[in-house]
Image (cartoon, rainbow, N blue to C red):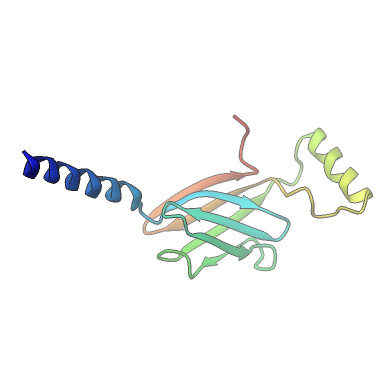
Length: 120
């Protein structure tokens, strides 16, 4: 009986560890005025200066290495335009992150994210 119980616990523990080990694939992406932050499924956080790179580049030390492309929404909705202009007028430039689409590509796959993420 104890042997069966011990084996059951060991299998449960191994199953729990396997669930925690996730593949290092992009799970989320966020933009600031200058930095792209990508979070992978294994918890790794990768950053790239997308503005200095011209909106495209490679996340080299990130997982197996991923290419990224940022497409900024040039004319967001009126409320967002007003909010951005107000923040700039008050001297808080860069506080409102840009709206954009982020494409992450690697290993023959492509992941697309919007930033800021939609509110559910």
